[in-house]
Image (cartoon, rainbow, N blue to C red; front, side):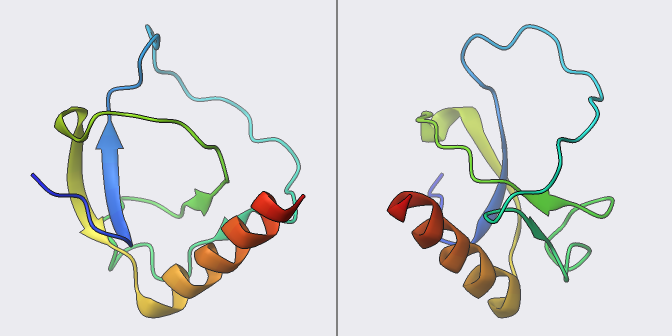
Length: 84
């Protein structure tokens, strides 16, 4: 499977043992509320948060693709975050 820029994926994160709901932190300059979350294949309103990790593509499954509007906003926030 190939993951392309703008794909929405779910993945197995190395070291993660339990998944549970957690309260969200206050928003940061690099956070973004997805405008087109339904079209991206998500089940509920979702935020992008810049959190860099490495993962094997074999551990990821593509569930959707971001709209041009959301992908553009996310790229801008990644550039901002990497410039800090």
